Image (cartoon, rainbow, N blue to C red; front, side, top):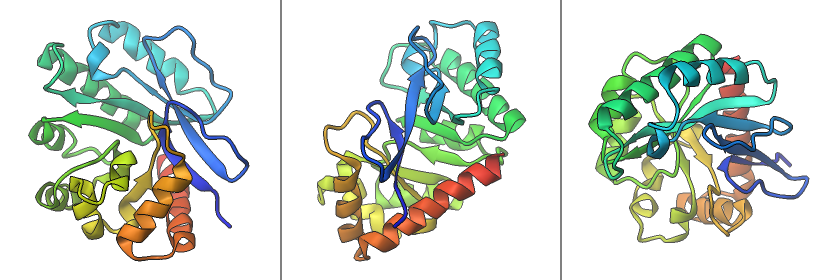
Length: 218
């Protein structure tokens, strides 16, 4: 049986049947590279590290063999950080993803037009973390080549993603726990039910997506 893939978590799942990508925040001092990880500067903290320092830090972490992706990073119109600063930071992450051939894990709140525009010519694997969009938005993003990482929201069948999940091809799908108290197994189970497919089939497909994202990057 293929492992459960938890593509984005702040609390790595235990158990031998789970592969977790531990999200690390660049502005924090307690960084560890012993496990598979992603790393980036979240838009909430985009003003806490200069672009020059951020570039050096991303270059440094690119040398770590356990680095899976850059991020989470992105744009958030609900936070107080200058939107121009957020865009500059996000653009730098995109440049490093292309340079080092890594996926990018994207945080987006109310900035879909800008995310689409900024990634238009980006050939890296683009993973929308914590995705909970409508059918209309999902259709638009599918046409732009995004992948979707779905989390705790899928446990509510009346959520936007609960209604939109069926139009996402499983080849473009990842699952995550983020900061949820629910285990990744529960998210897989709810997703399989929503898609009306077997959980084994879902695990195998997401495992293949994961392997594909690593080979496409490196």
